[in-house]
Amino acid sequence: MTSEEVFVEVEAAQRNRYGEDICGDAFKTLRLPDEGRTIAVLSDGLGHGVKASILSLMTATMALKYTACDTDIVRAAEVIMDALPVCQVRKISYATFTVVDIHPNGGARVVEMDNPPITLVRDGLAVNLDFEEVSSPRYNDRVIRVYDMALRPGDRLIFTSDGITQAGLGSERLRLGWRIKGCREFALEQVAKDPKISARALSQKILAQGLRQEPFQRAFDDMTAAVIYLRRPRRTIILTGPPYAAGRDKEFAEALEDFEGRKIICGGTTANIVSRELGRPIRDCLTAKGASCDIPPAAEMEGVDLVTEGILTLTRTAQLLERDDVPREKNPATQLYEILLDSDSIEFVVGARINEAHQDPNLPIDLEIRRNIVKRIRNVLEEKYLKETRMRVF
Image 1: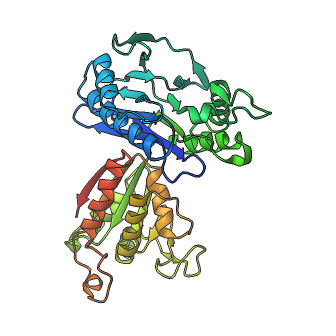
Image 2 (image 1 turned 60 degrees about the vertical axis):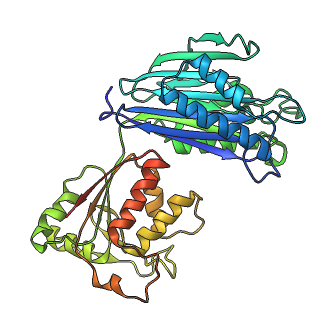
Image 3 (image 1 turned 45 degrees about the vertical axis):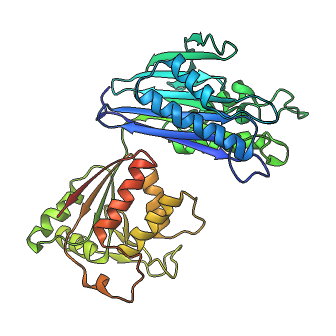
């Protein structure tokens, strides 16, 4: 397995304990492009609210750093536990963690301390995993499980905080909670229904089903469901802005034509160039469902998945990605947002010609020049969502 053949999709869905404004679980991710590694950490802090959040964030941050530096497992766990602040009520410092470290050859190590056991789904079945138990002489009550495994394309790793597995605990229907068995069976059912279900969709479904186990669907504890999915990359290309030299219009349009994956055009001038060079008419949708007063409606073109206005739509998409709030409105910016989140590898083909319409001083200050907006989108896609991106300038 090489990084070119397989994309490692990492996603998590979370819900705060009912009545709390902050989640006591922390989920952090890191890609090391030079090494081809992907690292994900899930930590659950003692209790809930701000105190739990501090414990879990400290644990996840340190675990991520020590894993990236290949620090000895026991030594790293000792340093983490030494550093955690002591709860003034229970007089202990406590946070659980699960660390997943995936290498480009498919080798993976999972380090788990007091979190529910990880699940490997392969060919629609849960695989029995061997592990080694290690412990620190100084913290011999804390047992660490270490799994070493070889992953294949199509594999999924599912790991959760105990807010998921203990959902419904003590209720008349589920006195012992949903348990690991219930979570695994549900995940396998979802994969059977949709063998290509994304990590994002599966994590959201597991969280939603966990909430259904709770009385009144109110989370009794912080809940996190994380999924890692190794798959063939889903590719998307975005053309925006006219080429600097008009003589490159044909080459510019052919970049879209020759691309294998989803195709998006952002910008009226860009769409006109592609339409002219490829001989494909643009169908305006001025009354398109989901159009809003500040985001112009999308258009349609044969062979293109989405045709939108340019700078306004890209700027709004950048805002949506930075906030990571599921948008309630439906418009071309939210459509673009959803496509980007469902993609693994995104290529931006950016024209360098200045559009005079964007030099109007009456336009909002947030309308940055096109390349800066694309850079903003690329940064958040790479850093926050672990997407692969590249940019070509015409």
